[in-house]
Image 1: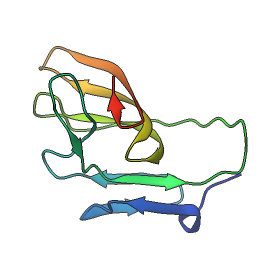
Image 2 (image 1 turned 135 degrees about the vertical axis):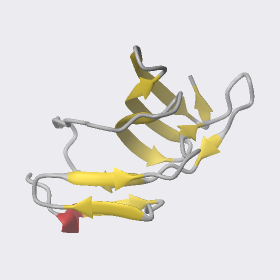
Image 3 (image 1 turned 60 degrees about the horizontal axis):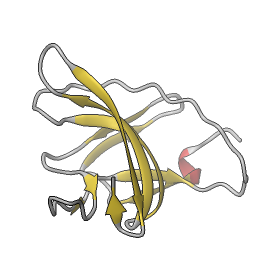
Length: 113
């Protein structure tokens, strides 16, 4: 299924974004993230998420990301999102001018790891 803007739905719509036929640009505010109940008690559930529903049991997609990282822990990525208690994110995270890391977080029943 080819996506169109009518297929998309926001969970926490950002202040600034643009959706065109071949590009989605999201500009987030500082200190937004998806992370729940860790052993060090950090919790943040305020990142914008642009979702597209599917009835397909099995699906695949391709995403190309590009972002202007400036501060440690700036991230850009994709999320498979059921609700704030259950999701998976895969991201690129800025550490410093020399290193950016790939990462993944799974949150199940409100606990991230």
